Amino acid sequence: MAAALFVVGFCLLTGAMLCWGFCHLPCEKWQFLASLPSVRQPDGCWRGINLTYYGFFNANAYVLATALGICLLAALGIPFAGFFWIVTALLGVCVPASKLIARLVEKKKYTFSVGGAAFVGILGGPVLVWGVGRVLWAEMGVELPLAASLAALAIAYAVGEGVGRLACISFGCCYGKPLAQTHPLVRRLFGNCCFVFQGATKKIAFADGLDGEPVVPVQALTAIVYCAAAAVGLALFFGQWYRAAFLEAVMITQLWRFFSEFLRADYRGAGRISKYQTMSLVAAGSAVPFALFCPPSAAAVDILAGLRSLWQPGVLVLMQALWLFAFLYTGRSQVTGARIHFHVLQDRI
Image 1 (tube, rainbow, N blue to C red):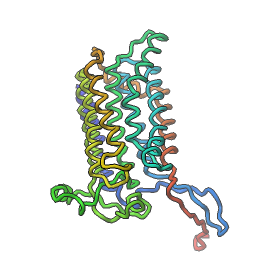
Image 2: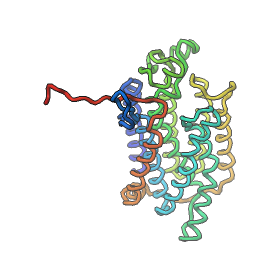
Image 3: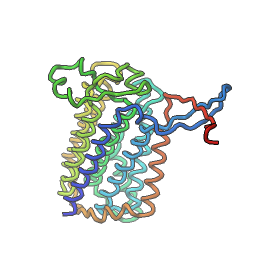
Image 4: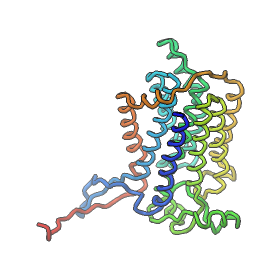
């Protein structure tokens, strides 16, 4: 019963977040959270540093994914040291990879690639988890169930990237093709539920001049597919179908990434098949041998123990530090600027 309520609560929470985001975030006012004065200009104005909702929603997604991963790992009986080092190792690899791969593929210095980070995480995750498991066994005598642990991380990744698409909607990146340039069937499907982005500082405007034009809501589709994959993965996880949960989460997210790029209009590198699409196919293919040959795990799941683990002081501090790091790392806009002028309201003196 507790597991079923957990899945239902997860669906309600993510569904509410996504519905709100789809309705509001394409608007211009949902791009910038704040501007901080940094350097005073000769004309008396200040040059500002823009803090964005892109960073805010990215930080929320990081924390939500991490919290879910910690909860599921703790539900397997893995101690705090285990999930701390698993999370730290994965984030330590994937966060820098998001910027490095975007620079290599798109030749852009000031951008991030979730697809690149996912590719590195999916390929490197089994090795990192196996390594942490060896350390736990040597130091604490605790056995780390590999299949169950990787299933938990794959589910957490799916929901993190799904909710993280709210950041893309806010910034206007990862946008779909104009409806006018798509097949008539696509126009009929999305004619009443398309995205229309507003604001000259959104990426869709300064990169392709598509602000104000109906486009395929590919970010929304990706968010729905990924969160649905996470929900199905949770059901399989609680049924102790760990290898199936891992395979389902990885295959659905990576195959959708391959297909969804045909609906996108933003630059993804040269060629009809982008490097990101190739990465997604490689990542999906790498999950198959794992699901076939990884030893099955019989670890029991205690979701109540997992939920209790989130209230530990160490976990709370970790989440707060992670949110702040993710917000500052991804939320300080490097492609927009601001001029700030302060003045006194004479009629209120």
